[in-house]
Length: 169
Image (cartoon, rainbow, N blue to C red):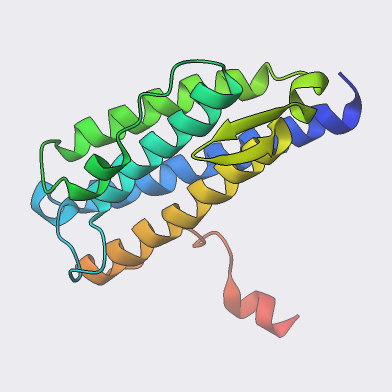
């Protein structure tokens, strides 16, 4: 594999893997009841978002890019109001990500350029990887925001940065 393709895959996996500890920390701060709370009727609970991430990552990475059957039931991701503890949700997410990352890691240059169909859209293999990476990051931000709303705490993701020292430079 050429260096550009290898770097693209490595950086995509790095970005995906950076988000999982953030979601884990959020779930650690919440009760199972809070995980399933919706801010309003137009919004989803953290539980719904995690189920949605599992479905989306499976559909794009595992089914399309990995050439496996598409078993996604998208409507159920959003209609669920319980059914999983926060530990079960995290396990489902981690298991899905491990499978997807293995497929991404083994994607060759030909597969990066090949066109796949996912959710009625056509993407190159590289496009699928970009989609999964940005989609996971987008929803990680939603989970962080809703966790902060529910708990009123700073999750400390950037506590290693001394903002006062940085602002004086």
